[in-house]
Image (cartoon, rainbow, N blue to C red; front, side):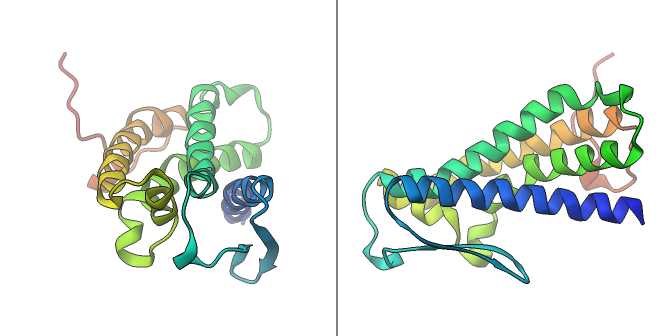
Length: 175
């Protein structure tokens, strides 16, 4: 039960950081209309309709949350393995899942996600004036690199030994 609670807390942390960053940056640009807590998660409602958006601010509003979550994920990855001093297994599991989500969800959100649900990549593309497929290709490489970091660094730091090929390292050690 504790593992599920830690998992749910990590989901909540990820969503709060991601959507909170959207809301904070949108408010900075005067675009925040509302921030609502819904049964399915947090929702940031912006003033300007999607089809009327233009300008660099949309790259910031859409992209800052993704960059922030990835940077926090890398930071937790660097210090997470050093959490052995923590006595609480709940806290360790929560840090593990939070790191996992921070490293993978937004990389997925900006690479594969747009084929399924649109999302932040469109705001970034509009704001930067570049093709969204270039952004998706870049973040697909980030997703692959982060997946490898998870397999080689995060899992061993928490003594997780996955069996599924998608969760194992794809790069062989040359020893």
